[in-house]
Length: 409
Image 1: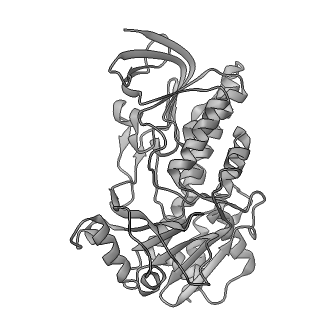
Image 2 (image 1 turned 45 degrees about the vertical axis):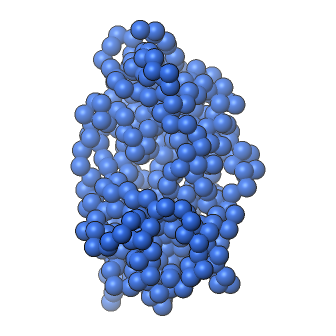
Image 3 (image 1 turned 90 degrees about the vertical axis):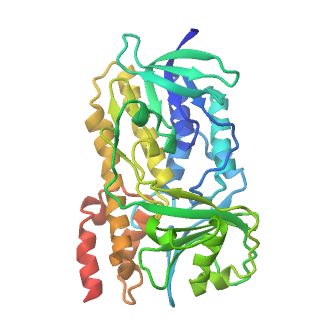
C-alpha cells in the first residue's frame, strides 16, 4: 500500500476544513485535505452570522467571499401570529462585524475550498477515509480510497476532522454520544420565491413560528438570485403526521401558517424537498492524541439561530492557534486551550436554543416593552458573539431565565 506523509491532514473541505487550511497555510504548514464528495455539492445551513466574517478574514478569504455576489445580511426577523420583531445586527452589544451574507452553500463552500487551494493546501476530491489509527508511532494515520478504487495510507503530525455530519472520527473511534436535545427533524428545499410583499426584508433571515405549536418553526432565507431556502423544524413525531413526499409535507405545514403561506403564495416549488432527522449530535471528547474535531464533526445543536458555520469557524480558529503553539515547541493542553473555550460559546447558544423551544425566549423577543440595552445584548448573541464574556448573557447564559420570568410577569 502506498504511504504518504504530511504535516496536517484535514478530513473534509467544508467551511471548518477550508478555514482551518487557510489559517494553517499562513503558519507555513503543509496541509492535505481529503473530501469524499465533488464540489460544488448541496449542503444546508445557508444563513451566516456576522461573527463568522472575522474568521473568514483571519484565514485570508474575505475578498473571495465579498466578490462572490452573495445576498447581504444585516439581521434576523421573527414572526409568531400577528407579532413581529427584528434585530439589526449592526446595533449590538459586542464590537465586530455587524453584517454578513446569506449563501447557497454549494457555491459558498466551493469558494472557500478554492481559496484554501490558492493558499497552498492540497485538496483531493472524492477521496474517502475508511479507517484511522491514532495510536501509531508515526502519528495519526488514515486509510483512504481514491476515485479509481486505489487504497492508500496517509500519516500526519496532526489530524483535523472537519467531516461535518459525516462525523468520520466519532464513528471510527467510537466517540459518539447521544445529544441532550430531543430528536427533531427538518424538511427543506430551495424555491423561486417570487415574494412581492414590500415589507419583506431580503437582508434578514425570517424565522416564523407555527400558530399552534410553539416548538415548530420555519426558516425563510432569501438569496441574491430571487430564490430562497425554505424549511421547517419540528419533532419527528410532528412531521410524521403528514403524508406525501417531502415537498408535499413541507408545503402542507407551510399552509397551516397564514403569514408564511401568504408570503410564499406565488412561489415556484421547483426543487424536491429533502429531510434530515436526528441531526443533533455530541461526542465524548473534542480531541485526542494527535487529533481534534472541528464543527459539526464534534457537536451540532440546532439550526434555529444559524450557529453551525460560526461554531465551525471558531473551532478552526482555536485549533489553528493551538497548533501554532504546539509546532513552536510549547506545551498545549487541548482540553483547556481548545475544548473548553469552544464549548463555552456552544453552551451560550445552547441556553438560547433550549429557551426558544420551551417558548421563553420567544416571549422575550416578542415582548411589547423591551429594554434597548438588553436587545443589543441579545442581538450580539444572535449575531454569533457567543464568546464575548463582556456580555452578561454570555458570562451567565442562565440569566436568560430571569429575563423570561420578567417578561411573563
